Amino acid sequence: MTTPPYIGRFAPSPTGPLHFGSLVAALASYLDARAAGGRWHLRIDDVDSGRSRAEYAAEIPRTLEVLGLHWDGPIQSQDNRREIYQTALEKLIAAEQAFPCGCTRRELEGARRGPAGVIYPGYCRDGLPPGRSARSWRFAVDDHTLGFRDRCAGQQTINPKDAIGDFIIRRADGLHAYHLAMVLDDAALGVTDVVRGADLLPATAPQILLQRALDLPTPGYLHIPVARDNEGRKLSKTNHAPAIDPHAANTLLCNALIHLQHPPPDELQKAPADELLAWAVSHWQPQRLSASMPL
Image (cartoon, rainbow, N blue to C red; front, side):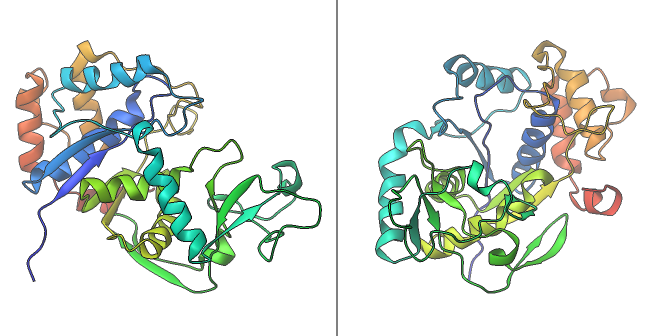
């Protein structure tokens, strides 16, 4: 049995400009793909139309190009794939793997919390209560143990029903949820390896459940340690991480490589981005992350 060629991707949300944390994720996924002789795709995760902005969807690719992070093929977008998401939802409903939920966010405030947030208590799992109408759709999670191996975090074992619960796959506003869109989009690209921040490690179990339910392949995973600010908070748009200046490409790439435990040699500290990236590809050793960095 031959191993399929490596296909990776970077999938930023256009809800703000790229910041240093997103650059680290982009660089790690790029290096992992290129070091394996594989393809690297770009997807603009604009499934959340209420928060996505066209100016950021245009700015993000321009910034990546200035940094020398050139992708393969056309940019994948989610906005034009909504019918595909709905078809998959209907397949899950027909297989009785999804159910309507009438619960509001306020009604779930007192529920247990797990690594992925609120653990759904199952109020609507056996049918909507009298007088309630469907607000969202949830995936029905079975009671079993799921295991997968992450190339940085190691072997992961979880009971998704106990730790996550029945998660949303179509939101109350009618938009399809991140988990459903992501697994369908990755399958469409033929993604074999997902490289992303460790903050998304809890998202892996529900995504594997959806892959299995929809007969989609499960890629390999590498969750990298996230970049943090001086107060220890993850750099993110929510925490108002500042936008990067693409004109400082060399400094940004050097700092990202240092974060990824691949400090470049002194003679490359002022080299053009393409030269610095060529060195990084040839020296990429992701095992350095798990050996030396906490998630």
